[in-house]
Image 1 (cartoon, helix red, strand yellow):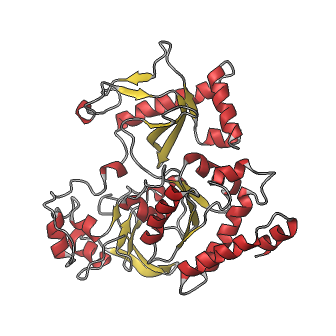
Image 2 (image 1 turned 60 degrees about the vertical axis):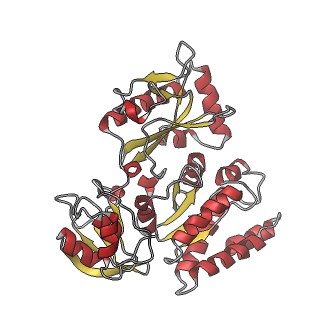
Length: 397
């Protein structure tokens, strides 16, 4: 949750400490007031830096060409613009009942996992991604063909696979995983004391993008003991964050294939992002990015881990009242629903559309958003029976 100061609101704090001038009149966007300014970290930026006085947040969203800076009053005061220690920042902001720490001033304005990997890492990652794409679609590749068949079995279409730049990394001629030197990937060997190089596992390669640049490489290995491996040096963004649109409804899922399933079947109805697991994506930067959505449908897996992860996000956005749990109901995750099409009593697109309708309904309610959202979901679920009449009732709702 953003930290609110009893002394400074976020607008006056930036005007005082960062010496920026706000632009235009303060406007109301989905019930939250916003004001724009030039980003203090981006000389020449044009009014794309957003300040939210009520929630105490700031952001310069990547998708609008920004640097990705985001956070609250503490992030500002401990950034390179001001240079306070965390203890000094808490005192200046007059925030009580917290545990002080002797933390040094930040030299960056975002978490290290919230920034892009080095240019050298991105170049190496892009090269691997391009090779993997070619291998996946090569007609003479037996393992590539098997990987493509697996993706098709999960319900993904060729267009979706290509748009996501998914590929396949084979074993090398010596039967080992692909290996590259730390130097080639722009990494410091001291950060990986138990390893002697960068290894890319054989399997389905899924790249994660922010601002059109590769930030993360993940390898999915169906049927293997270690079925999901992240390439060293990867950052921790949100999968699909470039598709987020300001003021639009967003669905949040766990896995990349879940995200691609929703984008494929209902991308014209809502945006969709994935965290990678039920416990990831929780940094201030991505919370701020998500807060710009008009409403969030929290659709983590229908299991204990998914429920626990969903609770974090429901609690995080509780004050903004723009989030509700929209679980896959009878299916473990959105992709399972996609695979069940033809047999299930509702399609993935219909399920997503009902979620959008619920979100719009809640956005029209002035108070009690969260409780009414849960009631609306229960009401929709009550309609779902294994007959056409019940489906028609749910669609009419």
